[in-house]
Image 1 (tube, rainbow, N blue to C red):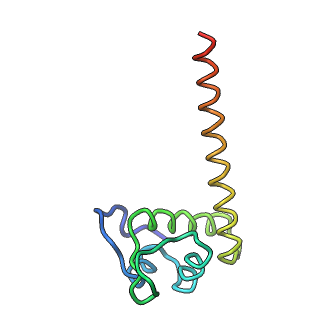
Image 2 (cartoon, helix red, strand yellow):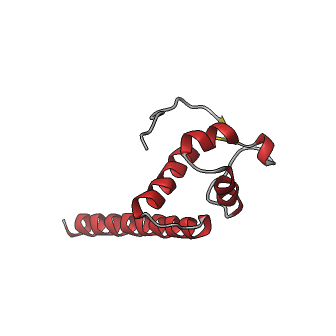
Length: 106
């Protein structure tokens, strides 16, 4: 599936627009909000809106699911994503510590 929309200005998308552009079902989006991965503006599905950061995240999640060609439910996908985020955080912390150690040695 080719990405039809590749960039956005700072904008907010309704749930319907978001699901179409992100390539996720509304059920997937609701589940991702329920587990805290996506954080829309608004109090209910009918008035939710999503920003560019949420769109980027949703596309990453969809690509992970599609690339692995696994029939992962949204909760497994969210867990996998959180683990990948944590790995990235730990790698960044390790890199900072190594840079600091090198600076301290010189």
